[in-house]
Length: 157
Image (cartoon, rainbow, N blue to C red; front, side, top):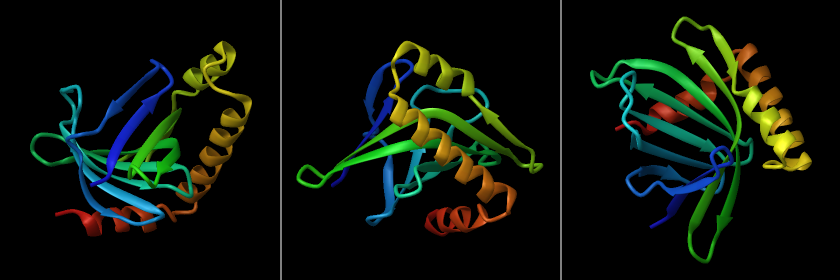
């Protein structure tokens, strides 16, 4: 069984996602169902698709009544170790929130800048994050994000 880790740069931590349930995976995508690691009042669980080649994690966040709160997109870098069947998903800090109304918000660019200034992120990682963010925003603005959301929804139990 695959082992999943979330690596954060701010704060610097690696957390095993031991309670996440893998619904689907192949060489390009991993789809998981999960409950929040740290309980939050606004949402309790969700489903995510890790788009390994694109460098995104697209998640649908739900409240305790299973109402969609919003779609949340993380910019990520993925490392995979075939021998141990282990994924490390590194959060590259920049995020995009797609509200149910269609409003798109780019968030946490200040964290990306702080990580660059402090040396927590390399220049190559910064450049990669910005290219991935740009590609994701183009997909959203061109209404093509639905392809990935459809793939995510098809895996929902």
